[in-house]
Image 1 (spheres, helix red, strand yellow):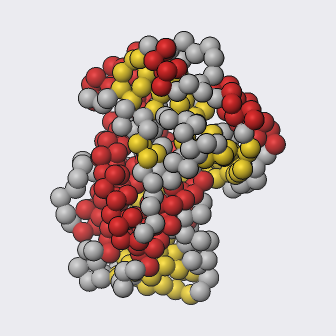
Image 2 (image 1 turned 180 degrees about the vertical axis):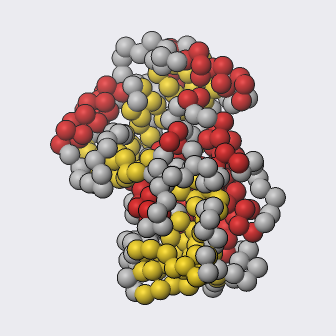
Length: 365
């Protein structure tokens, strides 16, 4: 297939879309308004699971399961080809004192996922630094986290090595080009960029761009703040989650704690209130963090969408325009499946899962 495809947005969804398409189409151009991978993809925690997977629809579950199974080989492939390790780190995840533990266990049995109740003493034995007072725990083995800043660096390096891929950073797209009822390119600050197919994967900004066509895509920015501690490499052996806050260990001893959920438009300013709240949560979860140094505090913008179900597929009434966006809190989790499903649809291959729940048709205003 000798098509030229323009991908608008260079987060993990846009980069992995381009990576998959590069083997199937003629030319791929990725445009990003800043540096690729520096928005939500860089700012998130990188847990390769929805925070509460049993609370999501089957549409999200289908993408999550496929991605979780695929991530280790994606990490190995990128490391082998670029020398940059995305660090897909399998630690398992403990949920503590859940209100809906029964629903979680019923979901796990139905979906055949390795999640089970454990005695709280076993949780304390496995995670000795855990704070006091927790009464109940469930554990899912095999859950990994990916070091998302390294993942996007690795994807960028892999794309730069491909002769038919062009990355255009600091290239803001302001609208779309139409010819004879078809989208045939994008308008950028550097001029018009023509394409056979255009893919909108612009994260929290996707709704604004689609609005230039008079279409309402219910994707909006939802701010999230995180903090980062530095500890010993063996400080935290597993991810832990309680009261909506989580701690994620990296292999080198960095511990991420997050996150807030704020509707603040496109404001990415870290706040003192969020810092205090996140530190308090961190110390409640892991009291030893009281004496650990906070080495980072930042905010990112999630692409909020109804029920967190992404939009994957062609835009009705606008031939040549496609969506792969609106992943809300699970862009990193769902990226491998979303981008493979998208590639299947654009190239006419047999889709990996049923594409109907993600189709933009009937879901746009």
